[in-house]
Image 1 (cartoon, rainbow, N blue to C red):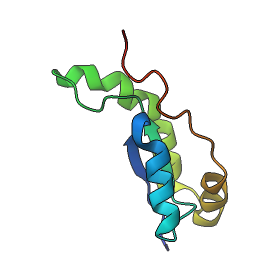
Image 2: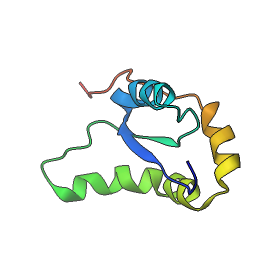
Image 3: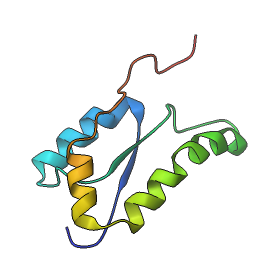
Image 4: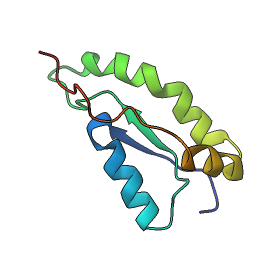
Length: 86
């Protein structure tokens, strides 16, 4: 992987996304968790979710590729716990 790239996934799929990236040889690919669900009946409902990750996305797309690989190879994810509010 030469230039910076990232993948944005719902928290419910962060562990799967990381596992797939590792199997494909991209263990340090920046996988960025976004609150679940990614879909919303109204577009405005997605704005807070996007606002919560925008700084990390910018970091992943503009940071040094080698440093990003090391950082994301070790990243711990919150994972799918309590995905849907009651």
